[in-house]
Image 1 (cartoon, rainbow, N blue to C red):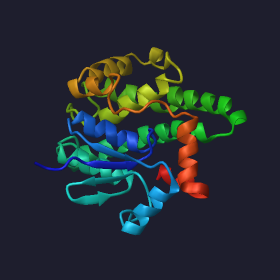
Image 2: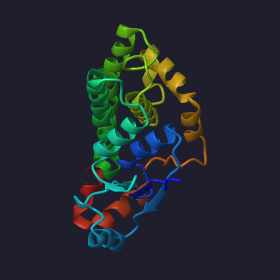
Image 3: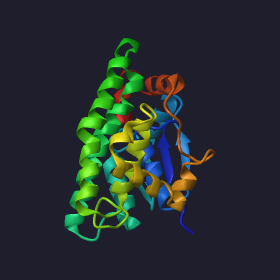
Image 4: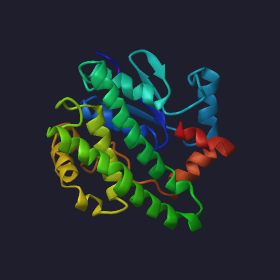
Length: 229
């Protein structure tokens, strides 16, 4: 029996959350090692476990993988969530990059100065409503299918749902102008493995709090931005 993937990150969302989402979606159980202090990080460096000195790092199939996009592509490819050909894969990549841009904007929010946070929330909502969500609404409208690419469930669908839920935590009615995205959210949320991941007690992490922010900064000192590779 293959060993469970082991995820090295903080006890919080950040870049690792999309990896948790994807593993949960394909029904793969995983273990987590939470970084809580600088000594743990330095220990991984001394072991040679961090090729690029970065986290997220995932041990899977005998490999130690860094770089979030590479990890996600590997999981998506292994579990048939990466399209049937090169053309489908490039559209999956394109849609994932778009949701990643939006999600990284949200991920940066807890690290801002208090006086900058209100304006930043406005920016997130504005970009979701005017730039990103209209794109995905149009994609669904134009091809009339249930999924973003090739009428087959893919990594792009998983990450779009994750992005939608992140924005809804900031603005609960954000999808009021996007009926196809609302239907998409409800449809994808009912996939059994995803539905389970959305339940209390799963390995899905809550919104970042002050403890998470403090831990990231403590582990990386002045290099804490490395958490967002």
